[in-house]
Image 1 (cartoon, rainbow, N blue to C red):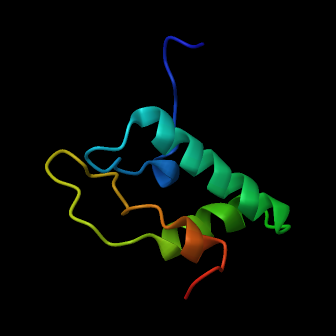
Image 2 (tube, rainbow, N blue to C red):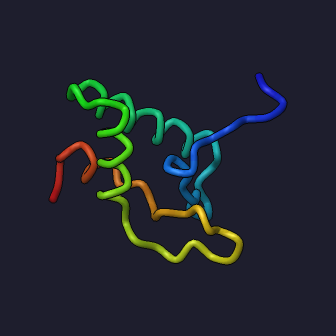
Length: 79
């Protein structure tokens, strides 16, 4: 465990209301692992996640929000 957890802006996403933090964390880590298993580089993984995210209103004080993670679209399961 760390007292401070640094997360790059490109990997910050808003957790939808009603989704427990532990579920959101596993979905994100799982999406990253699936993309790495497709042979993508770290930069490609970040770009894929950002380019396939669902556009959502992130609310106030969320200047780093890029949308909602869409795992199916990111891994190519849907268009």
